[in-house]
Amino acid sequence: MLAKEKIAAAFAPGDHASTFGGNPLATAAGVAAFKALMAEGLAEKARVLGAYFHRELEKLVREFPQLIEVRGRGLLLGVEIDGPADAVVAACQERGLLINSLHGHVLRLLPPLIVEQEDIDRAMAIFKEALQEVLAGGNN
Image (cartoon, rainbow, N blue to C red; front, side, top):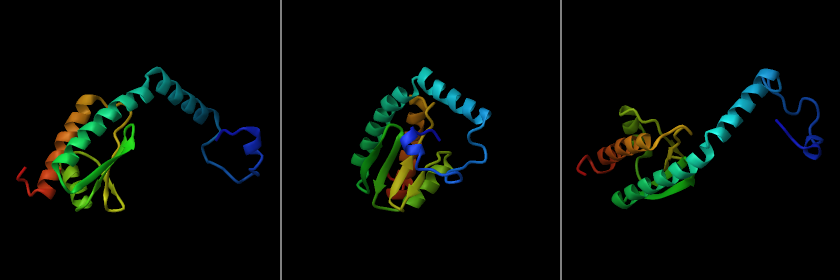
């Protein structure tokens, strides 16, 4: 944890601890991760590919009436569903796509920052196939 003096003053010894935090290895790993994020432009890539992913999910919302809306920002996206969210999750997992459901009515899709457009296209094909099976009985 890194905090300015004013904020850090609110903590007493033992308030915030970590078994592996604050050591040279953990610090070096954090610095390396931050440098990679910056050098590889991963935040911008997440913005661009997230917008693409969002548009592709919006197409499915128009196609499947049980899908209500797409939510999220960047690569953290969810699709609200009025239907069997857990069954869609299971159908995706059977096909090799890992998603989860939140509160039983939001399907969360969270690819890694190193995702490529081809990966999103493949995920969308699997997601659509799972939706067809679960929501439309495979008739779409």
